[in-house]
Length: 529
Image 1 (tube, one colour):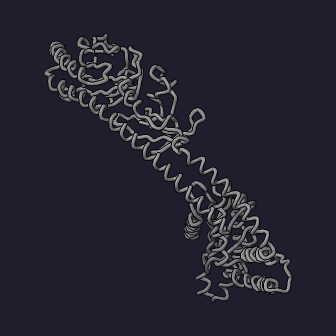
Image 2 (cartoon, helix red, strand yellow; image 1 turned 180 degrees about the vertical axis):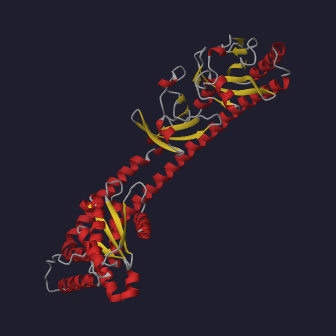
Image 3 (spheres, one colour; image 1 turned 90 degrees about the vertical axis):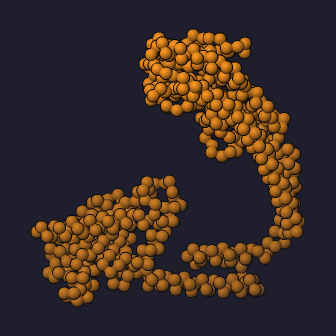
């Protein structure tokens, strides 16, 4: 036992060390991710600031929407935009486009710098060829027009240049009228330099994805010219709300930390789990094997020398468990003349007496003395056990219904003829309920209230049984010579619905509501007659 305890303590120590090492590795992943996030967000914020400054200049410079004024306005904006673009790092293209609904002559401009040799004018896209109300086409124009606010667009391949970019666009308004869009498209190469600078261990790296998990930049996968539908998807990151994600890539178990960027993309920093754990995994496995061997040997040794003592104790323990479950016939084989033998003999005699007393006690405790059906205590126990079965069988098919009965005229019978006649009235109602619902447990749950639990055939045939009950009640009342020999009972039945019922109380409440509705209809019928 000492060896086993010492080994367990050593094992727990190793587990604590490994867990601490993992926490440190996670903190390092998150620290690198936070640093990369700040650097990338700083770059994205500088692009936003540049475009918004241009947008402010554009709206302030507008002095009318006729073609001549727009043409002069466009010349002034070109000079301002050129100066801004040259000072903003990573700009691939910049543009200012006029909505064709404003002018069909002044279209705006589009400058590109694909080779890094300076911006040159490029032929603008003919917006009139597109439906500008459809935001799935010409997204750099249609989305900001539709949204009405500055917006970062998800990665897309430009229609004319065939290059994967992201863009920031600002809608332009003059006196509440939409005029056009100014925007900047940036290539991912500038971001790639910052992303590639994030390294962890020997094989750790960082990559970019959008909010749906589509890869935008990856140092080991060339995604720069793949169509959107062919892009790999980092499904683990898209589906997870946790900062740390465990996944498997190309047969290697990895852990990743991710954070959202200001332009809607996700920065992911990942590393192989084997590298984050270092040598602790090997040490952990060695200690585990050693501890298992020590525990096995020591346990075998202890069990061998204590078997003769533990066997009768195990039998007594199991016998006590069986008695607790209501089984008083569990066999006890130990009969030696010692302390355990005398204890076993006494236990056997006591369990026999308990069996007899419990049987008699159940009859007294759970049976209604007037009607001989089960009483309120039996009802409560039955409902609790049924609730436990529902909890254990959640997701499986469970079919049953609760029926609630209320004897309508009991107070009238008691007041007019006396309680003895009222008892006859209750007994007649009880016999009718038991006769019709003969395969279901019947309970008297109040002075004039009964309940049944319909299962199996009674559940499936409950509509026919209700009709039979109504017919039999009319027949008994019609043939009775005295009022206390008649039966007038309101009935409500509710079937268990796993979609809406969270507890047995929900079903019982609905059954009560059905019973009161039946009582109301029956009273209205009597008044109409």
